[in-house]
Amino acid sequence: MDELDSAIVHHLQLDGRLSNRALAEKLGIAPSTCLERTRLLHRRGIIQGYRAQVSLSALNRSVQAMVATQIRPLRRDVVAAFEKSVTQLPEVVSVYTMAGSDDFLVHVTAQDIDHLHAFLLDHFTERREIISFRTSIIYQHLTNPVLGPLPPTTEQRP
Amino acid sequence: MDELDSAIVHHLQLDGRLSNRALAEKLGIAPSTCLERTRLLHRRGIIQGYRAQVSLSALNRSVQAMVATQIRPLRRDVVAAFEKSVTQLPEVVSVYTMAGSDDFLVHVTAQDIDHLHAFLLDHFTERREIISFRTSIIYQHLTNPVLGPLPPTTEQRP
DNA sequence: GTGATCCGCCGAATTAAATTCGGCGCCTTC
DNA sequence: GAAGGCGCCGAATTTAATTCGGCGGATCAC
Image (cartoon, rainbow over all chains, first blue to last red; front, side):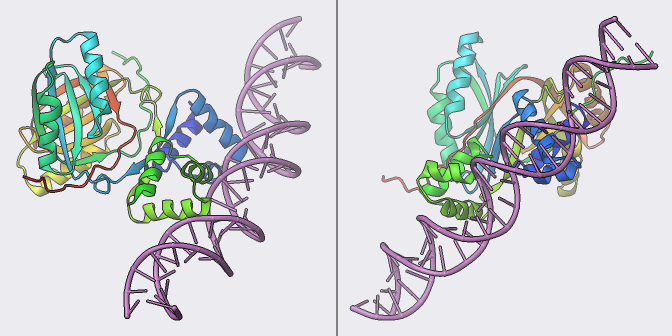
């Protein structure tokens, strides 16, 4: 993970369909070299894959909410089952498993407020392991397009 | 946004680097047709772009946290300035602007707990518009790889 | 110091993909 | 029933991905 690898990762985060030739040119290296580097980043699991970013409104998902959820008992199997089943619901975008007073933050999308309400009644009110949930509407979700490497931890001089 | 468009969006969410030919074959259409469809999805803003998914640990970001933040005054300019400056910080992955008791959820990553603490002291404790923030560690963040279109709202028969 | 070895980079050749474009068929409209 | 428009197709062309043999610098043993 040297400078060159970081630059490749940087550019592919900005544009995952950047052609190998164009990327090589940006970095000032040969296409074959660039291809090999990029493949290695894959193989090492550093680049995990490529995804198209899709407009939520185009998918008829104009309402977003975060559902702070508590479940009991907090046993491994109950947690895993909750995560799995919830992630599979089409309205669910992502699930944060948390420390603290809330056990999960579930990011959900729906057509409108009525569907959000129906979704919660169908999938949260009903479940026995869920002992409470608080729903907050999301006005806006901004995402940082590029995550760079953070500097390694080094000992501070005293 | 017919069946075919949905299928294209579906496959490109799973693999943003799927070649046009392979995609066309999966759908049983000609490559030229597939290319035209995909380009239109772009032009219409339905496909917003492509991103490489990068391993957080490879970027030296092993610790994740959600910071529930309140700012005052809740004026348009103050909100916009907060969103902008926070999104630019390298530790910040995304910012949810919320209704409810918390004004924002800020998803942050750091090398370790010490850096997370330092980050919060540097960028949250200091800011005058932030009147409170609660930090919760994220154990795990699961993401739904594919978001399909939700069925349109239709009137229920009474 | 010197020779051997390894590793990563390069560039030409080959294979495969993206892109273009003219034409065909179907559906709509009048 | 004829005219027009739209979307799909497939061959031709352009561009990109991939392969692979070789070069050069760095490392290591002696």
